[in-house]
Amino acid sequence: MSEKDNAILNKIIAVKEKMFLINTNPNFKSSEVTSVDSAIWYLDATMNLSHAFISWEILSNFYFDSVFVTIFANDGNVNYSDMAIAYDELKQKITSVCIEAPGSEKELYITTLSQKEEDGDSIIIKADVTIGSRTTTPDYHPFEEGWNYGDLLGDCSFQYASIADACTELRDKTNEFRYLYVNDEHMLYIGIPHEEPYEVLHSEDPVFVNVNDPNPEDNYYEHLLVYQKQSWVYHDCIDETEMNWYYHRLNDVIYDMVPNNQEHWPNAYGKTFIEIKADPNPINGTFGTKENLPRFIIRHQYKVEYRYAIYVGGRSQPTSIIEN
Image (cartoon, rainbow, N blue to C red; front, side, top):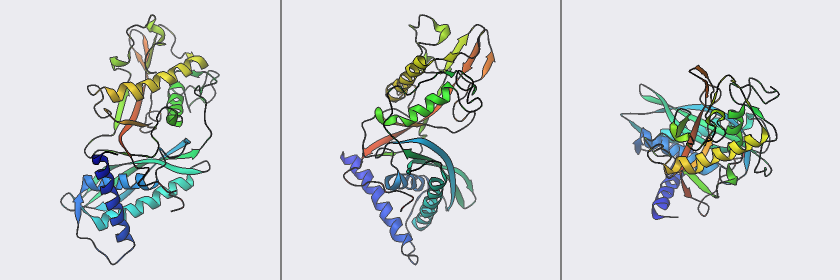
């Protein structure tokens, strides 16, 4: 661990201990304050340090939800006593999400906090919560069936219509099998105050087009499942082999291409892929729309979260949010 990472971890642990002291001593009132941005950052980092299993357990079958807490703020500052109360409330709400999520052997995968709005002398904090279940080791080739390209048309037999398509399936499989590609056990993933942790990958970005594609009409050689041009065919079935090919190309993009290109994706540069978000709409974080251009184009979008990683295995490890 570098001196910088160690200093960051020490700050998070110090704030965690301070909030624990406040919450276990109701008569104690702290006079110490911190900025709103720092308060959100510390709440995020402390919750994930304490209870997120993102690099400690193999989790899949993800469930997504959001919870909100309100915290008092004065002239852009938050008192540590109010921050401690918000942390306790946040923990209780995330625990409820974990308990109510489908599946078994569930844990908090990661949560991402942001300021939702400001209302007079208080702020509302939103926590995007991802819950996962423990699972067995999957195959490197997760697809055994074909899927229709977009618009939630389901698989190639039109099962799961209005529920999923190739784009959403690639998103979900990528999230589930993340650990196969990242040797990052016992890491804490932190955001940076004032910086958006997401990158939105748009189909319109020419960086995804493979200039050496011998047949650009079928989109087979693109780096990412982002769009398809066809003369008359709108929805093509992508067979099992192609789905697995796209799965690996999507991983090339999110692990290698995006975090190593500061010009195109500055929010991801030098950071670690966390997950493809299932929020916001349309179509649960991805979308496909038909436009009446010279040829039909199905456009797709992925909202991808990246964070800075520090090793914490020798200093701290998470505990189940349900049991603690």
